[in-house]
Image (tube, rainbow, N blue to C red; front, side):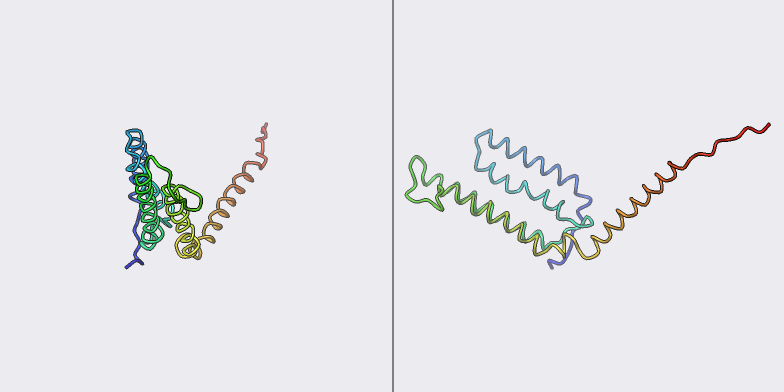
Length: 171
């Protein structure tokens, strides 16, 4: 079931617009004073860029949408949910405890969203690198493409540097 791939080529423009709209929405929510909602929106800002960036030959595996993207989303939402919970729990007072030296509301964001979320994405890159990001033969295809471009440029520069025979006047 997760071995299926989705063709993202028809959606690239829509995904880029969605990414920009999510950034704008987050900014506007924050300016309007809805900081928690703005934080929740920022979790999803990463999604369109991940989908486009992780696609190979305009296709993305469903595996990558579940792990790491799904895990990143859950950890991000949990981190910001923890921030909301602890900020309300300790509003107007100093917390009785710290988590790794940080206020509990910030520790939730730091450990779940930043460390957990982004480490899961980086770990997935290592796990799925050969299968999804740079499958066998893709590097060789890239090098062959570069070599063809270099050959074209060499041929073009050689033909441009050849002396042009001047026409001689015949009397």
